[in-house]
Length: 107
Image (cartoon, rainbow, N blue to C red; front, side):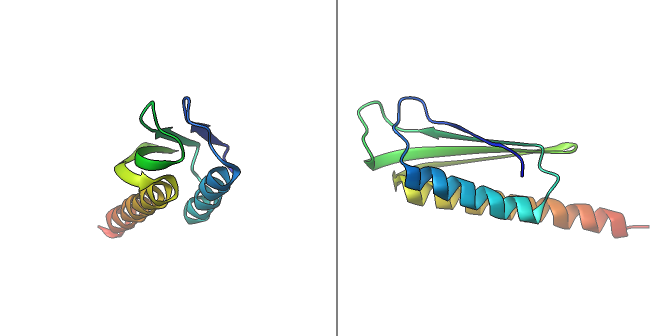
């Protein structure tokens, strides 16, 4: 599996959040084993603790010849922001494969 790089600034990231990110990343990796780079950036207000938002989760997936970027903002809880961002990344990855498959079918 491609290494998942997590950037979280001054935010203390819990083991639960890391495990959630790793789990979501593994699921995306099963959709496309050619993912070359996997960066996750989590931003929160400076006076933020673990709850109270808004969190922003930014995901970059590098594929051969393609970069998929997702940013989900304003989720009040970190787990919700992670889940929503990875769900959007999955949809974009599926759409990329759908378009790639449709192009291959054209004469």
